[in-house]
Image (cartoon, helix red, strand yellow):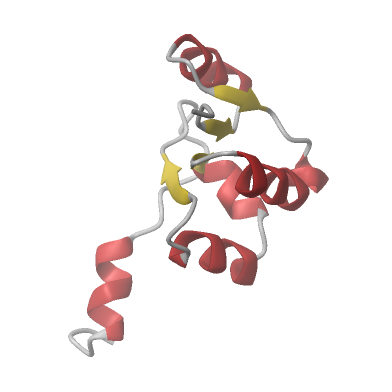
Length: 98
């Protein structure tokens, strides 16, 4: 079985590496290409919030909506980029808030 892949900052990558994941710290302009490679190679892809923010909205939505591989956005250890507010987005899509 192939190991999960984590794309994010170096500090978090050290912890994910200890947990058995393959880790990649993409340069700011290479986040989309790193995601494409990870999608082709891993059963599970974990993106830091900062890397997810640097990936185009269409590509990120497509990756998150796909059934395989599973893709999750995880919090940054450094806390520089806030997590997406999924609950607010769902309420807006359901017409419960403007």
